[in-house]
Image (spheres, rainbow, N blue to C red):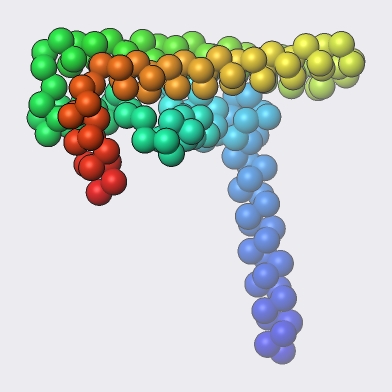
Amino acid sequence: MNKLFFTLCLLLFTTLCFAQNVADSLSAPAKSLGYEQYKAFFDGIDINNLDRIAVLNNYPSPQKALSLKKELGLNAEQVTQLTAITTELKRKMKEMGALIIKNEETLNMLFKTKQINDGNLIFYANRYGGDIGELRNAMLQTYLKTQNILSAGQLKKYSQLHKL
C-alpha cells in the first residue's frame, strides 16, 4: 500500500512540475522563452551570468564599485564615469533584450505557421547568437572600463571587499 501511495505521489509531483514549466513558457509573450527569461530580457537583467568570466577573473563590476564608493574612496569623476557606464549598460541590455524577444517571437511565428525553412532558421538562429554575443560584449566591456577607471589601490581594496 505504501509503495502505491508513494508512486502516486511521485507521479502527481512530476506532473505538477511539468505543468508549471509548460504554463510558465505559455504565459510569456514569447512562447519559446519562459516568463522569467522573458522578463529578464525585457527589464535588462542578466540571469544567464554573461559576465561570469570577468567576475571569475576578479575584474570589478561598475555597479558593485559604485555601491562600495565610500569604502573604495571613489572621487567625483570616478563616480560620474561609473554611473555613465552602468546607465549605458542598462540601456544596451534593454535594447538587446527587446531584439532577442522580437527574434524569438519571429521564430515562434515561423514555426507556428509552418513557414520555417532552412534559410530563415539559419538566419534567426544566428541572429540570436549574434545578439547574445553583442549583449555579452557590452557587459564585459563595462568590467574592462571599470578596471581602467579604478586606481591600483582601489582595485586591491575592491578585491578584498569582493571576497567577503
